Image 1 (cartoon, helix red, strand yellow):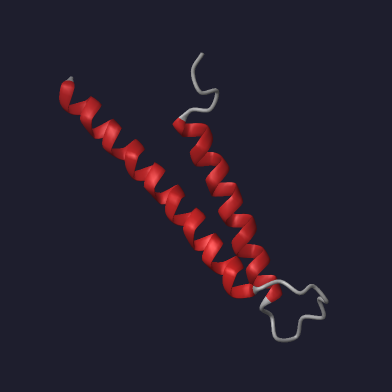
Image 2 (cartoon, helix red, strand yellow):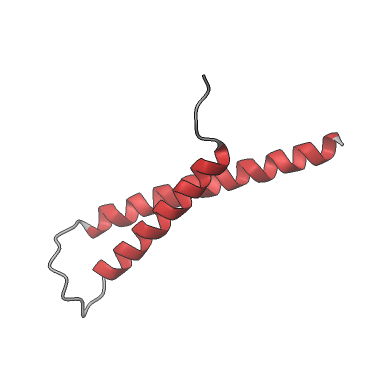
Amino acid sequence: MGFPLGLWDMSLWLAVTAIILLITSEFLSLPYSKVKIYVDKKKLRNTAFVVSTAFLITVVIRIVSVIISIKRV
């Protein structure tokens, strides 16, 4: 039995997660924010950066696979 998620599914999941993390980190960093949530903003932004980078890597892999499949034809 293979892995149930493909590259497309992982890429979509990473994109949605990265967007949620980036929006959350921006809402927590507003100077006029009255949010009383104590979250380490630096760790949240670093996590968002890592997830965004992973998403971009999956996009590059898909682009390379498309280019390779075009050259074979």
